[in-house]
Image (cartoon, rainbow over all chains, first blue to last red; front, side):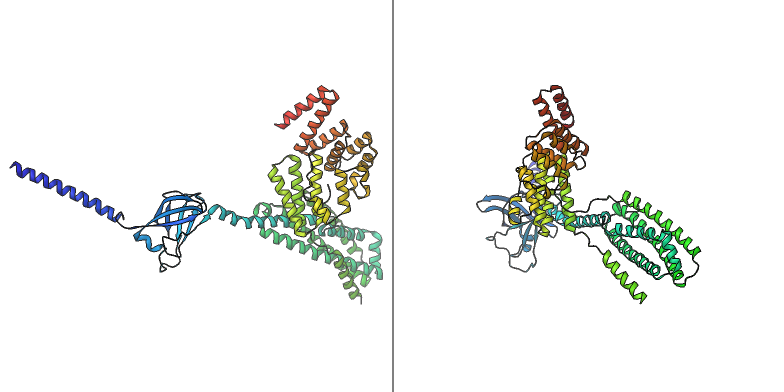
Length: 316
Length: 222
C-alpha cells in the first residue's frame, strides 16, 4: 500500500516537472531563445548617443538590439543581434540610421529598399548615419527665419522710403501742398476764371500732377497690401501700423479725387469763360479741407511710423 | 495740340517723380550696424554684438562695396575709441590697401594718428571745430569743442576718446562724456567714462568727488 502511494507521488512529481520544463521550453521557443541569432557589425566615428541594448527598428518593429560596442583605431564598431526570424530584412543594401528624436530615446532604424537583395555579409561593416530631429528642425526653421528677415527688410525699406525726405510719400505730400497753395492764391484763381492761355496750361499742369500723384499713391497702397499679405497679424493686424497707414493713404486718395473733380470743373469754366464764382468758392473750400487733412495726415504718419534717416553707412 | 502738350507734360512730370527703392542689402547692413553700435555701447553680450557686426559685413560684402566695408571697420574702431578701449582694425588695413578712399584714410588718421596730418575738409562736418582745436593742442578749446558736440552723442564720445588718447584730459570733457553716455543709456560707455572720471578726481586729490563717482559706479555696475 505504502509502495503504491510512493509510486503515485513520484509519478506526480515527474509529470509536474516535465510539464514545467515543457512549458518553459515552449515559451522559450516561442520567444526565439533556441532560434539562431545573427550578429552584424556596424561602424561609426562616434559612440555618442549609442548604448548597449538600444533597439534596432524596422518599419516600426523592434527586430533586434545593440549587443555590444567596441572602440577601435578606425572608430567604433557596434554589434547588433538580429534573431533568425527577423534576419530577412537585413540585406546587403540595408541602411542603418541612428535616429535621435526630439523626444524619447535614440534607436537604430533599418531601411531596406529591396528585401530580395542578397543578405548582408557579416564581414561587411555598414556605417551608421545620424538623423538628428533637432538639426532637422533647425534646418526647417532656417528658411522661415530668413523669410521673416526678408519681410523685416522689406518693411524697413518701405519705412525708409516713407521717411526719406526725397521719398515718394513726402514728395507727393509736398506736391499736393504746392498745388493747393498755388490754387489758393487769389491771383491764380482769378487768372483761371479769366481763362487765359497761361491759366489753362496751369490747370492742365495741376491736373497732371494730381493724376500722377493718384497713380503713385495707388502703387504705394498696392505695395502695402502685398506686404500685409505676407506679414503676421501682430504687425499687420486690425490695429497694426500698416492697416492704419493704408487707411490714411486711402483717405488722402479720396481727398485728391475731390480736388481732381473740382479742377476738371474749373478747367471747363476757364475754357468756356463762364462765370465761375460759385465753383471757385467750392474749390476754395475743398482746398482748405484738403490742406487741413494733409496736415493731420503728416502728423499721423509721423506718430505711427518710426521715421528714421535714409539708411546708408556713414562714418560715425 | 493742347492735349498733346498736356500729355507730354504729364510724362515729364511722371519721369521726374520716379525714385529707386533702397536696395535690401543697404537697409539690412545699416540696421545690423546700428544694432551693433547699440549693443557695443550698452554692453550687450559680446557674442551677440559680434554677430551683428559680422552680419553687417556680410550684407555689405553682397555689394562688394569696399568703401562701405572700410567704413564699417572704421565705425568699429571709432566705437572702441568712444569706450576708451584698444582699437581692432580688423580687415581695414587690407581693405584700404586694395581700395584707398581718401575720406576713410583721413578718418583712420583722425582716430589713430597725428591730428596735424588730418585733413579737416575730408572729415565728417561735426568734427571740424574739434579737429581745429586738437591741432592747436589747446585743452580749453578742445573741451569747448567736445561739449559743443552734444547734438551728436556718438561723435562727442569719439571726440572725447580722441582727446584722452592725445592726453588732453579735463573734467569738462569727462563730464560731457559721462553725461552723454548717461542720457543715451549706453551703460558700457558710462561705466568706462565714470571709471576714468574717478581716476581723474583721485589724481587731482579730490577724494570726495572720487568717492561719489565710485559710489555711482558701484550702484549701477551691479
